[in-house]
Length: 241
Image 1 (cartoon, helix red, strand yellow):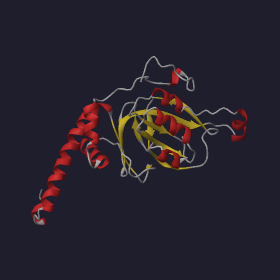
Image 2: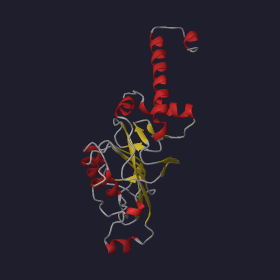
Image 3: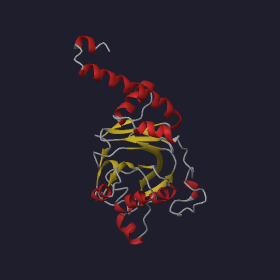
Image 4: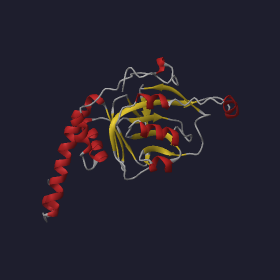
């Protein structure tokens, strides 16, 4: 992010939290990305540490099952607009403001949107902006549309589902880079987001190194157990490992 970058004005300054996300060390992010079973190991580490942060892909579905991401959360809070659609259409002013988050994004950031059920919080234009800004992808607790487009440009999204119903006349962005709730998990700006075809995990920024250490230990144990299984070790001995 660039603190000198002018805001778009789409969201009032007083509704924007930090302009600069806290950043985890690059080597720590690389170590997370190297985990083969990314969300599974992180979920297990969160369990061991008593942190609630894992969401299954049955709740937040990936638009691209082959995609993986790992990066800091850039948060957006959306709410129902509360106006008749016809009146909003007549006014011809979209109250969606995730473009302000895109404007603040740095390469590798993950757009995290607390959306509105059944209404699209982002489509082709927003995904294209995010891709141009170098974002790793998006997580939306709500619906999205134009999935073929986002998949085609390599901008993966994890979401509740798809909907053709535009949020442009139905949703308003009330905050950027403030805490949001994603499937019951509180996510703060800068928290680590990891996601793959199995699910999404949110790791509190201040616990990331601790979670990684546990995940790496669990990965080594699993690797050892698989190797011994492949070696032909009797199951009565293997289950004691």
